[in-house]
Image (cartoon, rainbow, N blue to C red; front, side, top):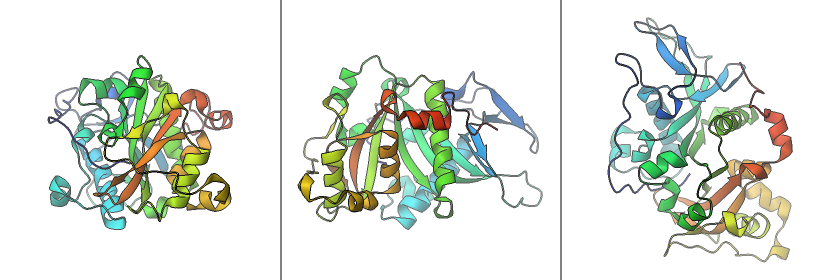
Length: 315
């Protein structure tokens, strides 16, 4: 997840689809929804992408669920990790930026929570991803990733292809297990299928801002997982941090893999590759790398595992 968002102008808030009904994300309008009983009006919820026990993966249904995702991001990025809150994030204790208004928010929810007296049941948000489609980015102020990496040449090379930016991924500590990660990927795969996505791009973070202390994982990604030129991107001018800090022959590959964050390892497993050079994100206290994952490069065993129509965890 990359750090700063630099919008040239404020992004307008999405409007509700129908008067009196909860907000439905713009990219979901016209798709199947289901209705659950609550107090007062029924609550329109996006179609479930899958379930495992008490956990479910689906898109956020409206502003209140997006706020809950932002609170989770704040807890992980600012309270657990070393991000420094500024502006609204500091005031509201939520990880907030202007991109939240134009993105879809993928959630993993735990339904096994105690019901509060006199309130409708509310599942707990335990994992999230932020999804930004290329057509939506183009209609507003571009991709978030462009704040750190010069992706304009890549976008020009793949003009006409449907791109999806992945970002702001995090999972609540007690839920950082195979089940939650698989549900997130099942949700992403379902979203990719639904919107005919050709490739996914974004940033992934290594904790810390000292490249020398991250020499092993950075060098491993540079030598053994570098993207082909057509899918590569470099940091913006003045932000380049060399990744080839150790010679390829001096790297213990097994130790290097163990040093990678779980999210980066997950990207590697499904077939993602990484760009040329890293960028330091001082606000979030991370060193970020560019990630590219063309759908055609996804390992066949993962497509078979989640199902060609993303139906492995269908409810």
